[in-house]
Image (cartoon, rainbow, N blue to C red; front, side):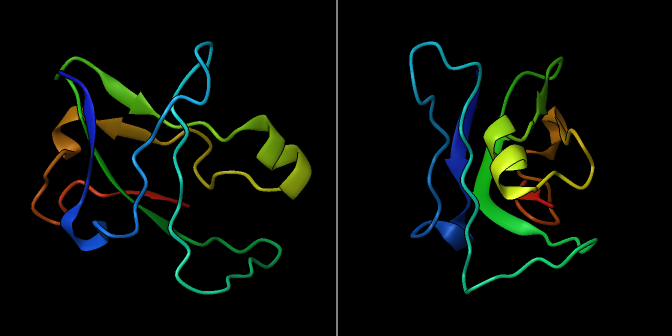
Length: 101
């Protein structure tokens, strides 16, 4: 079974990932910005999504930045393509919370 869930800490702020259109290649994730945030040149910031993902043991979740964010906003993900392992779900350290940097 594959599913996204909102973690307890962000139950009133997080948005479950959705496919924007029938032909969407993947799901759109949202970050939670709790105050005005500026990112300086060569600076790395981590943002909560409030989301955890459950999926079969033989799968991984890969996150890609939308091309429009990179082109229009000049933003990229710090680790290029984040990989989420299936056993990250409900881990004891952070409930499996997917963060983006």
